[in-house]
Length: 470
Image (cartoon, rainbow, N blue to C red; front, side, top):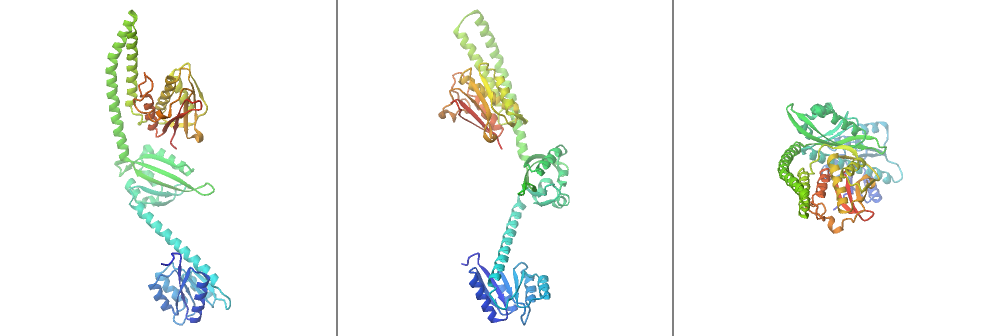
């Protein structure tokens, strides 16, 4: 089988001696070339129609048809095949006719000397260019076929959104707007966006034009009555100078996802209502028991009464933590930007451990539900005080390259064997522990789509590292 890099050349010339000579010179100069010869334009056309030819080399002066006549016939059926005129005659008329007929190049035959190197260089260059263009064309065709059947909208805009450079049929399925309309007015898709979301979408467009990748969710008023949810991702493409040259993106219908989220919210609300009711029903008799035990303890000194009071207190703690766990930390409320130093300091103050200390060595901006995150940090700090000592020294800071944040203590630490279980519900190493504190931490962190891990701190204590999403 021939190498795919081989090049088949058709050489047409009515001079048999030149056919033999030039063919031999070409093949001697390059082992990539194989030459098929024809002594007339008609015979050349027969060969072209029956064999795979990559390039045509033709003389101009031939008795039946000139090289230009041959070229015109070839261009009707082979518009992009490289065609070189190689003739001893050179004048402006021939050159002009050749260009008009679509000649690829024009080479004057020297009387003496070997021009094979020049011809080989031109043939190889033109054939490889044609092949690369064919690959690009085929690739583009396949890509268009792929995105043409996709249920997502793929698009490419100019940096200022004034020019639509590419879009597939998925746009019409999502926006209910024809491709012709958006091509005529590239920003007309904004007419379909819900009025309440216009500002958010246009802000994302401005940020993308400034070179920042964007992810935005918004509503679309489809067909005037049907409302759907869409999500668009945009990636600015820049040149070597850092200037934005195009905006590439994808838009998908996320209505089902939003509906599922809404159903989940409703279920969570029902669960919270149920657990709150149960907790209320439990606390009433628990308060009665606590009050009576305390009254009895005022009249009688008894270790059994002290034990009963401790048990009642632990039951109250269990109820509180079960309520928190029932809220499911995977469901996070509204997120806002807050400094890590601020939220961890507030969390420490809420724990009220007067004998301990906290040193914050660094800070970064976190996109979070600050109330839930503060709750998670409180549990980590409380865990350090309860499992270490009341005078624990805590340090909080930022991980390298701002990949996240950490809180560590100077206590006894957590052994490697126990680290895999530390976030399991019900797992505790403290006799009075509920086993829910760190499980709640894990839920809240996961709800932010972050990751948490426990390792050893600089002084051997426990170090909790929270790696935030990029």
